[in-house]
Length: 278
Ligand code: C2E
Ligand code: CA
Ligand code: CA
Ligand code: CA
View 1 (cartoon, helix red, strand yellow):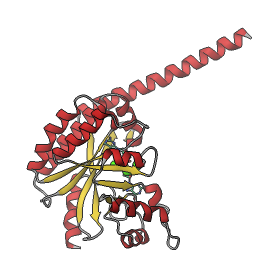
View 2 (cartoon, helix red, strand yellow; view 1 turned 90 degrees about the vertical axis):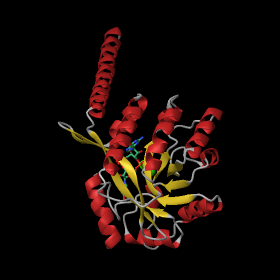
View 3 (cartoon, protein in one colour; view 1 turned 135 degrees about the vertical axis):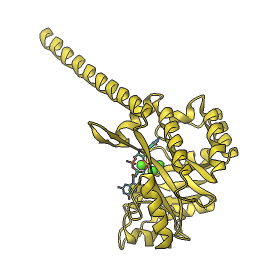
């Protein structure tokens, strides 16, 4: 009946409105948090599998909201990506990273890698080249190698303009890592277009390494990368037998809770000191 249809339409409209205002409020809160520098960089160590030294760290955004408590990146990053806020957020994280490094409480080895997640929408933005030109010399002066971790979330072809940007990043001395390899659209076509320096094998595959069953898929990815002169990092390493398996199969770099969770800079400095000693 018409009454039923009207009632349903009203309910639907209300739901849509509620969702819209919810999103709007998260957007507003996020914009505020970025401005107030309430979103901080945490550092998760990257371990060189050949030498066992800490060869770098991945920068991960952490938001502790006054009322909501810890808001996971999986909640706020998609909101930031749908809006231009991701650019402000990335900018703010880099400013804080530079502040952290300039405190001088740790001396990073020259060529230490700092991996930063770069969203596709940021890469696609007109201002991306200026962003690269602004930050590349800052990190070069600090003796740190910037690595942009890029994920293909949507199946977008790398256009000529995009290929140009990739080249631009490389000529400024910034390296490229293909993130979450093996999931979503991070596929073989993306490797040939992006020509990354390294690929990060997603946790989903690392999780499949068990005590006694071989994981030929990981072996193949490492083998393929080697043939293409691309370094490999395993993400989400949690157990000693995963470390052993990956080392036996010539992985280059290891990352995961087995070594450390992402840490605030002070704790990261302590980790670096103890890891060098222990
Ligand atoms: P990602 O880039 O794949 O980052 C790795 C995620 O795995 C991080 O989650 C990290 O805390 C988690 N992780 C690391 N080792 C382990 C492990 O051994 N076990 C398990 N279970 N998890 C592990 P996090 O920090 O929650 O970030 C989630 C995602 O949010 C990231 O995935 C990345 O896509 C995005 N993200 C986080 N910070 C930023 C940022 O500053 N910018 C952008 N564009 N994206 C970000
Ligand atoms: Ca990443
Ligand atoms: Ca990843
Ligand atoms: Ca991931």
